[in-house]
Length: 246
Image (cartoon, rainbow, N blue to C red; front, side):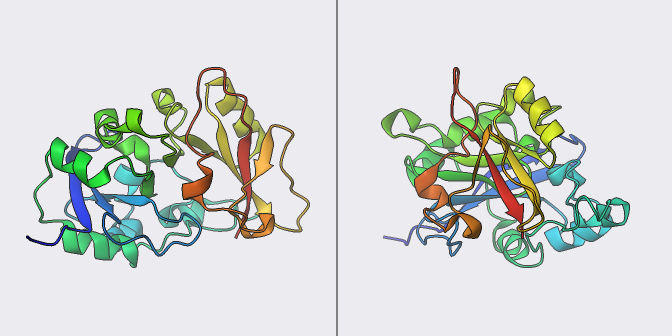
Protein backbone atom coordinates (compact mmCIF):
# COMPACT_ATOMS: atom_id res chain seq x y z
CA UNK A 1 0.00 0.00 0.00
CA UNK A 2 1.45 3.37 -1.04
CA UNK A 3 1.97 6.06 1.53
CA UNK A 4 -0.73 8.71 1.64
CA UNK A 5 0.35 12.04 0.21
CA UNK A 6 0.77 14.98 2.55
CA UNK A 7 -0.27 17.41 -0.23
CA UNK A 8 -2.97 17.43 -2.87
CA UNK A 9 -4.02 19.77 -5.67
CA UNK A 10 -7.75 20.50 -5.30
CA UNK A 11 -8.27 23.17 -7.97
CA UNK A 12 -6.69 24.41 -11.16
CA UNK A 13 -8.58 27.02 -13.13
CA UNK A 14 -9.40 30.71 -13.51
CA UNK A 15 -8.97 33.13 -10.63
CA UNK A 16 -12.28 34.63 -9.54
CA UNK A 17 -10.45 37.97 -9.24
CA UNK A 18 -8.88 37.78 -12.70
CA UNK A 19 -10.39 35.03 -14.92
CA UNK A 20 -7.59 35.50 -17.46
CA UNK A 21 -5.13 33.98 -14.99
CA UNK A 22 -4.96 30.29 -14.08
CA UNK A 23 -4.38 29.55 -10.41
CA UNK A 24 -4.09 26.45 -8.25
CA UNK A 25 -5.21 25.51 -4.76
CA UNK A 26 -2.91 23.06 -3.01
CA UNK A 27 -3.72 21.64 0.40
CA UNK A 28 -1.03 20.35 2.74
CA UNK A 29 -0.83 18.86 6.21
CA UNK A 30 -2.87 15.81 5.23
CA UNK A 31 -0.51 13.40 7.00
CA UNK A 32 2.01 15.66 8.75
CA UNK A 33 0.75 18.45 10.98
CA UNK A 34 1.70 22.00 10.09
CA UNK A 35 4.72 23.44 11.86
CA UNK A 36 2.76 26.64 12.46
CA UNK A 37 2.34 26.68 16.23
CA UNK A 38 -0.25 29.47 16.15
CA UNK A 39 -2.66 27.69 13.81
CA UNK A 40 -2.05 24.21 15.17
CA UNK A 41 -3.07 21.03 13.36
CA UNK A 42 -5.04 22.43 10.44
CA UNK A 43 -5.07 21.50 6.78
CA UNK A 44 -3.31 24.40 5.05
CA UNK A 45 -4.44 25.71 1.66
CA UNK A 46 -2.11 27.56 -0.70
CA UNK A 47 -3.58 29.71 -3.46
CA UNK A 48 -0.89 30.27 -6.07
CA UNK A 49 -0.45 31.05 -9.75
CA UNK A 50 -0.13 28.06 -12.04
CA UNK A 51 2.84 29.23 -14.09
CA UNK A 52 4.69 31.74 -11.91
CA UNK A 53 6.63 31.11 -8.74
CA UNK A 54 4.99 32.89 -5.77
CA UNK A 55 8.16 34.82 -4.94
CA UNK A 56 8.47 36.03 -8.54
CA UNK A 57 4.80 37.02 -8.61
CA UNK A 58 5.20 39.23 -5.55
CA UNK A 59 8.02 41.14 -7.27
CA UNK A 60 6.19 41.78 -10.55
CA UNK A 61 2.69 42.36 -9.15
CA UNK A 62 1.32 39.22 -10.82
CA UNK A 63 0.22 38.10 -7.36
CA UNK A 64 -2.84 40.35 -7.75
CA UNK A 65 -4.65 37.34 -9.25
CA UNK A 66 -4.34 35.49 -5.93
CA UNK A 67 -4.02 38.37 -3.46
CA UNK A 68 -6.31 40.95 -5.05
CA UNK A 69 -6.14 44.46 -3.65
CA UNK A 70 -4.57 43.45 -0.34
CA UNK A 71 -2.70 46.54 0.88
CA UNK A 72 0.00 44.33 2.40
CA UNK A 73 1.24 43.00 -0.94
CA UNK A 74 5.00 43.67 -1.20
CA UNK A 75 4.55 45.09 -4.71
CA UNK A 76 2.37 47.85 -3.28
CA UNK A 77 4.88 48.83 -0.60
CA UNK A 78 5.95 51.97 -2.46
CA UNK A 79 2.35 53.22 -2.44
CA UNK A 80 1.70 52.38 1.21
CA UNK A 81 1.26 55.01 3.90
CA UNK A 82 3.96 53.66 6.17
CA UNK A 83 2.64 55.55 9.17
CA UNK A 84 -0.75 53.86 9.00
CA UNK A 85 0.38 50.49 7.63
CA UNK A 86 4.13 49.99 8.10
CA UNK A 87 4.44 46.21 7.72
CA UNK A 88 4.07 44.17 4.50
CA UNK A 89 2.60 40.66 4.44
CA UNK A 90 4.24 38.39 7.00
CA UNK A 91 4.13 35.37 4.65
CA UNK A 92 7.48 34.97 2.91
CA UNK A 93 6.60 33.87 -0.61
CA UNK A 94 10.06 32.42 -1.22
CA UNK A 95 9.61 29.96 1.65
CA UNK A 96 6.56 27.69 2.11
CA UNK A 97 4.52 29.08 -0.82
CA UNK A 98 7.38 28.56 -3.27
CA UNK A 99 8.29 25.09 -2.06
CA UNK A 100 4.65 24.01 -2.04
CA UNK A 101 4.20 25.35 -5.58
CA UNK A 102 7.37 23.64 -6.79
CA UNK A 103 6.52 20.24 -5.33
CA UNK A 104 2.89 20.14 -6.47
CA UNK A 105 2.40 22.30 -9.56
CA UNK A 106 2.52 19.37 -11.99
CA UNK A 107 0.24 17.05 -10.04
CA UNK A 108 -3.24 16.26 -11.38
CA UNK A 109 -6.27 17.72 -9.64
CA UNK A 110 -7.66 15.21 -7.14
CA UNK A 111 -11.23 13.97 -7.45
CA UNK A 112 -13.94 15.20 -5.04
CA UNK A 113 -14.02 11.79 -3.35
CA UNK A 114 -10.23 11.77 -2.92
CA UNK A 115 -10.37 15.27 -1.44
CA UNK A 116 -13.20 14.46 0.95
CA UNK A 117 -11.41 11.33 2.14
CA UNK A 118 -8.13 13.19 2.66
CA UNK A 119 -9.67 16.10 4.57
CA UNK A 120 -12.29 13.93 6.32
CA UNK A 121 -13.76 16.64 8.50
CA UNK A 122 -10.45 18.19 9.56
CA UNK A 123 -10.26 21.93 10.03
CA UNK A 124 -9.04 23.86 6.99
CA UNK A 125 -7.16 27.14 6.93
CA UNK A 126 -8.59 28.88 3.89
CA UNK A 127 -5.70 30.79 2.39
CA UNK A 128 -2.44 30.01 4.18
CA UNK A 129 -1.20 32.03 1.24
CA UNK A 130 -3.48 33.90 -1.13
CA UNK A 131 -7.01 35.26 -0.70
CA UNK A 132 -9.96 32.83 -0.53
CA UNK A 133 -11.92 35.14 -2.86
CA UNK A 134 -9.71 34.01 -5.75
CA UNK A 135 -11.18 30.51 -5.46
CA UNK A 136 -14.65 29.42 -6.66
CA UNK A 137 -17.08 28.88 -3.79
CA UNK A 138 -17.70 25.29 -4.88
CA UNK A 139 -14.07 24.44 -4.03
CA UNK A 140 -14.53 25.53 -0.41
CA UNK A 141 -17.86 23.70 -0.34
CA UNK A 142 -16.11 20.57 -1.57
CA UNK A 143 -13.60 20.81 1.27
CA UNK A 144 -16.60 21.11 3.60
CA UNK A 145 -18.24 17.98 2.20
CA UNK A 146 -18.28 16.18 5.54
CA UNK A 147 -19.11 19.25 7.60
CA UNK A 148 -22.36 17.71 8.83
CA UNK A 149 -20.34 15.10 10.74
CA UNK A 150 -18.19 17.53 12.70
CA UNK A 151 -18.25 20.96 14.21
CA UNK A 152 -16.38 22.80 11.50
CA UNK A 153 -14.14 25.64 12.56
CA UNK A 154 -12.35 26.41 9.34
CA UNK A 155 -10.64 29.78 9.32
CA UNK A 156 -10.11 32.30 6.57
CA UNK A 157 -9.64 35.98 5.80
CA UNK A 158 -10.35 38.16 2.77
CA UNK A 159 -9.39 41.69 1.83
CA UNK A 160 -11.94 41.46 -1.02
CA UNK A 161 -14.98 41.70 1.25
CA UNK A 162 -16.46 44.67 -0.58
CA UNK A 163 -16.56 42.72 -3.86
CA UNK A 164 -17.34 39.24 -2.49
CA UNK A 165 -20.00 39.65 0.24
CA UNK A 166 -21.07 36.05 -0.39
CA UNK A 167 -17.97 34.96 1.53
CA UNK A 168 -19.26 36.38 4.83
CA UNK A 169 -20.40 32.98 6.10
CA UNK A 170 -17.02 31.39 5.46
CA UNK A 171 -14.29 33.94 6.19
CA UNK A 172 -13.50 37.07 8.15
CA UNK A 173 -13.18 40.47 6.51
CA UNK A 174 -9.58 41.62 6.87
CA UNK A 175 -9.64 45.27 7.92
CA UNK A 176 -7.16 47.81 9.20
CA UNK A 177 -9.27 50.63 10.63
CA UNK A 178 -12.33 50.95 12.82
CA UNK A 179 -14.16 52.57 9.91
CA UNK A 180 -13.42 49.60 7.65
CA UNK A 181 -14.61 47.23 10.38
CA UNK A 182 -17.92 49.04 10.67
CA UNK A 183 -18.36 48.97 6.89
CA UNK A 184 -17.68 45.24 6.76
CA UNK A 185 -20.07 44.58 9.65
CA UNK A 186 -22.79 46.36 7.67
CA UNK A 187 -22.20 43.87 4.83
CA UNK A 188 -22.70 40.93 7.19
CA UNK A 189 -19.07 40.11 7.92
CA UNK A 190 -17.33 39.55 11.20
CA UNK A 191 -13.90 41.12 11.02
CA UNK A 192 -10.25 40.50 11.75
CA UNK A 193 -8.58 43.86 12.34
CA UNK A 194 -4.83 44.35 12.37
CA UNK A 195 -4.09 47.17 14.80
CA UNK A 196 -0.85 49.08 15.30
CA UNK A 197 2.05 47.56 17.17
CA UNK A 198 1.47 46.73 20.81
CA UNK A 199 2.10 49.70 23.08
CA UNK A 200 1.10 52.27 20.45
CA UNK A 201 -2.26 52.98 22.10
CA UNK A 202 -4.43 50.94 19.72
CA UNK A 203 -6.90 48.65 21.47
CA UNK A 204 -9.80 46.36 20.51
CA UNK A 205 -13.19 48.01 20.09
CA UNK A 206 -16.16 46.94 22.21
CA UNK A 207 -17.25 44.67 19.35
CA UNK A 208 -13.84 42.94 19.25
CA UNK A 209 -11.74 40.60 21.33
CA UNK A 210 -7.98 40.25 21.21
CA UNK A 211 -6.96 37.14 19.25
CA UNK A 212 -6.62 34.46 21.96
CA UNK A 213 -3.88 32.67 19.98
CA UNK A 214 -1.71 35.78 19.80
CA UNK A 215 1.39 36.40 21.90
CA UNK A 216 -0.09 39.53 23.44
CA UNK A 217 -3.09 37.51 24.62
CA UNK A 218 -0.85 34.88 26.16
CA UNK A 219 -1.15 32.28 23.38
CA UNK A 220 -4.00 30.68 25.32
CA UNK A 221 -5.02 28.45 22.42
CA UNK A 222 -4.42 27.71 18.74
CA UNK A 223 -6.51 28.58 15.70
CA UNK A 224 -7.41 24.90 15.33
CA UNK A 225 -8.86 24.80 18.84
CA UNK A 226 -10.36 28.28 18.84
CA UNK A 227 -12.19 28.53 15.51
CA UNK A 228 -13.51 32.06 16.09
CA UNK A 229 -12.31 33.14 12.64
CA UNK A 230 -14.81 30.99 10.76
CA UNK A 231 -17.00 33.76 9.38
CA UNK A 232 -20.48 34.90 10.41
CA UNK A 233 -23.67 32.97 11.09
CA UNK A 234 -27.29 34.16 11.11
CA UNK A 235 -27.87 35.96 14.39
CA UNK A 236 -24.17 35.63 15.26
CA UNK A 237 -23.37 37.43 18.51
CA UNK A 238 -19.72 36.45 18.68
CA UNK A 239 -17.24 39.28 18.74
CA UNK A 240 -14.89 40.06 15.92
CA UNK A 241 -11.13 39.63 16.32
CA UNK A 242 -8.31 42.15 16.64
CA UNK A 243 -4.57 41.59 16.73
CA UNK A 244 -1.51 43.82 16.98
CA UNK A 245 0.81 44.13 14.02
CA UNK A 246 4.01 42.13 14.44
